[in-house]
Image (cartoon, rainbow, N blue to C red; front, side, top):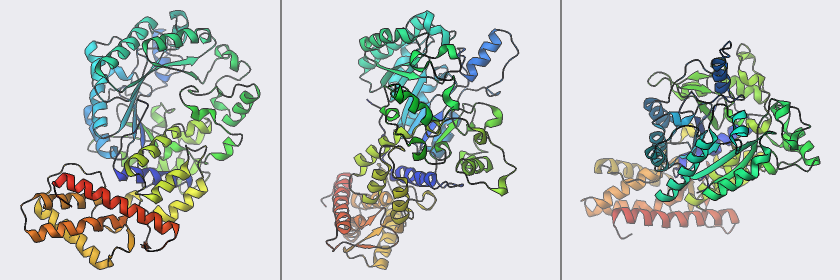
Length: 556
């Protein structure tokens, strides 16, 4: 299974679109929550990789040198309490949790439980591991039975000699055996987990790429190469031999131009697994918004609760706050001065009121592609929206279309104009009650009656007659709660009048749609916009009747 999103609640999609609007417009304070999350299960690692903060510190201790404290001082394992806290606060909006950052995730014995919790909330999951540790058969089966979408292993070489230059302290034979066992167990269990052999290309291992690729193919896993941000001239592979080391300090556009001239345009991050990186146009630098995606749709939470502005931040002093269950929430941090100052600074909007605030973001030297690192997943959000809602939400569908395949193809100005005209009222996260796809819920009759009474009052108030469509923000309750109320009365031992009342409310619900705006729209015109809304209403009415009929076992 390729990485796929399974979200079904409408509020997650409205949060996503609102977040894009806030990013494109450079909002200082946001109403939305992150939709992608890096959540580190462990703050420790057993290896000593020379490009990783934990590895540098481990190597320093191994050599009994003065300890280089590059990473957080308070090392922990992600606890069940913190995991539950994060899901309670963010789970409704998250499309993806990446269970990794600077620690080795498989060192946390509860990892499979955390993945299962995320899966149960329709959140896609991904794990990135060095796999250089002993794994029992039970542990492997637990991982693959948890709903995990993707696991990738960093194996930078095929021989031990080449591999251990970067993965210091690792055992490549153990890693390959673990990878083989994962593939075998996946096939045995029938799990839909993608397994990746991830190969960072250096001068010392480029000659072993084909050996590694053949091994991956033989055992049935996906092989992908990636170019690392290299700090040592001697490590630069042949296709980058004239490049300055650690190219993250350079503008991506300039680097891509040099590579294109050399006929090497396909070399960058994960170039074989994500074609997104291959389609960089010449105006790349101009095309991306003058903001940072990490301040809007993405966030990083370390194992002990520190919230970092991006995946590159690793020091205590650079954190933006710490989640303490029962005391400090993510929301308390998400719009604090550090975040607001960073959003302003990255958008080129200085604020005298926050001149006293200093953040790591103001010294960021990473190219824009790193600042918008996970936008290649946006197309998966759009695909999922189409799967769940189809043509029933035409204005939201148009918004997704304007976003294209990610930032490289987004019509930012068109999206802003469309959002402000059609979606700003109905999709503002702070003004919208939580909505969800119907689940089996035993709603008490008195609660159901009250919900439908308020819905009936609204119908009378606006004079609903089937010739107009209204914005669903007018509803006192979510459409899903109203449907649940109808199901409750149709399924209960109530009077015929109550049942008729419920059946009468059912078709009316389709005349409330997201994205209509403050003014109702006529449905009796032959203009294309009205026709589109009429089809949306008809499709939604059919869908609602089928859904409620099936749940209540009623003829509708």
